[in-house]
Length: 287
Length: 224
Image 1 (tube, each protein chain N blue to C red):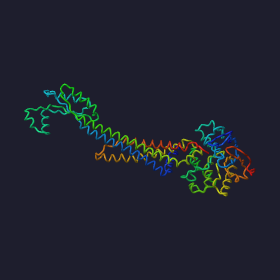
Image 2 (image 1 turned 180 degrees about the vertical axis):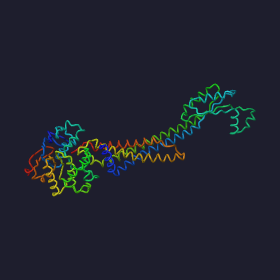
Image 3 (image 1 turned 90 degrees about the horizontal axis):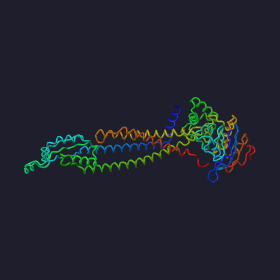
Image 4 (image 1 turned 135 degrees about the horizontal axis):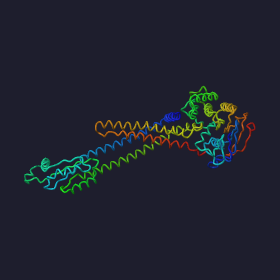
């Protein structure tokens, strides 16, 4: 208990002693956690937008001529397929009405009949809607004995997937660059903060302190800086996302991810301090 | 007892110490003299194992450095009072806190730490400066503070590098008097200095080091 108190007390002192460098370390860690949380928030928003678009996706299976009586059976078969969330039956009459609403009903008078086939509109779970999967799904449905042809917005799906992929890659590159820069700044500021404690470290060694007693307070100070910076950075970003989500602009924040972000910057702070303290503690190279 | 047996620690351009054999017995006072770069500091740092010798053996009490693991070096250092030339004072701690750091590191109770710290601060003449910070002290007082910290754990030997550096004659004499009073209580002394004249009249053995080797040994009165 006495040792733990010693570590905590010296960690706090070490951070205070570091002054501006300590604040810089906290600020870098806050920035790092804020970036991390914000980028994850953007990713969630993109995913949500994509999911909303994909939830509009539908596939229409048209019956072969003269098989209108098979419509309920086809609908039942389609509804039982994997990833299907619902089906809408469209009779020949409904198809004609739909056509008339969109264009004109005069064509049916001219033709003297309704040539439009009955169909089943299939709705899918957005998480299942992928161009490759839908392509094989459409092929399989098209092979059904009662189905004449299958229609869906395949081109749109491919474009959506391409755009999503590009956005994802851009986010990944942005996240990696920001994390690299922030981690570098964090390491440098933690290193400067540790340097300010060299006299303390020498004093502890001179009076018979162990390497653990020298290192642990610095590592704890790095963790403390990470905790303060992480709570400030990730906390504020998460709070901002939460407030925006109340207006439906962005999805709800993932609190677990925010906590993980805080834990992550605590680890970075501790690692930075751990590496930095190794340098001044090395054996002197010259008399 | 501190003993160095044929100890070498060599840096670039032959700097360092070469084949040094030296013994500091119980209650003995040894002053290492030499010019800058002669190897005095290297010799002292080898004794308190800030670096290990390249060859030879260093013995401090029951500890043989060659067979002492890194993690056991602190135990060896606790037998010594160490004052390096940069003093290593903690600037954001008061005089009292600098000295009580020893008790915190060694896991003493508050009462034991307070008693030991106040006693030693009284001995070095800093009892009236408990709440001051090192930057508020004169050079001589800073030196006394470093000595106090080194003495809190009642070591059998005090090792001090350039105890009189940057001090005026009067302050330097005061520090030597303090060292003499510490020695009179039975603490062995191993000091490195280039100002041997201040030790005239004290029962010290003077060892002259040049280019990392011992070139002369005599009582201080015998120095010319």
